[in-house]
Image 1: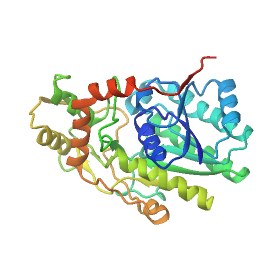
Image 2: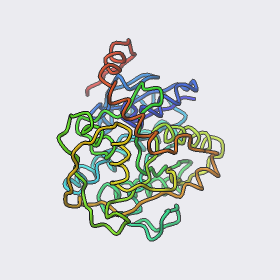
Image 3: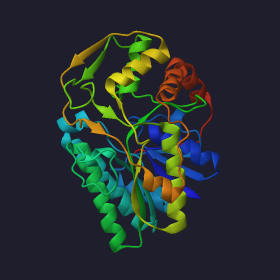
Length: 341
């Protein structure tokens, strides 16, 4: 199948590209490389471009003529979205509209959307399922809710089919150690903790210790990146087979507190790094855990790596070997098309 993937050089996108490439799909990645990396694209071709460039986007879409589009390109940091909401509305909504317009012009009808548990805000029940009212508490979550609304309206008005996958907390690295998280300024808890274990950061800050949870810290549903990737592959197969539009949660159904994660990182790495308590960050809900029953029932998805220490271990192995891995991947010949209108 011909698949157009935005943000496919980023953390989640590159792992999904890895899974789709292994299945033999014809992949075209469109990424501005603001947070992604050329070396992370293990399959397909990469076009360096931005979704704000309508001319380039339309040209590429019409030339490639994909059967489906997977949309990862977005700004994703909750705290930043509170500080810079306009950036998030421009990138996550305006650029998504540009992509959807290019799809309509090229008569592409199938869309897989990278959504988020942030659409739920502070849910009235945990685990949270897809029937719960959406009440985002930060601009990032709001942009994802608006994105889902646009897709729902398009599916009613046009011959257009989509699945929105609402991720919970994605972590870990490729089980084979080829790719992993490589943000210049990581915000994810597990990565920040591992940077402390490596000595690349002086201490780990725990943001908020007075939440209404067992130990006062936030509780999250951590899911391994390869399980997220397999969920995309199976959700896309379901969409292409049935043509049914839907939204589906993607998580494990149980949560760990910040203190739980810190303890697990120290156990896996055998390093006792400094930890400090800090004030809450704006936009963080106390508890968010997934009910992924719909995803499992409709697509047959079953997680393979539902183990916090395993998740941390794959991320730790990537951290320890990432410099060498990146050099190897960067040295390999790749088919990269550069554009700059």
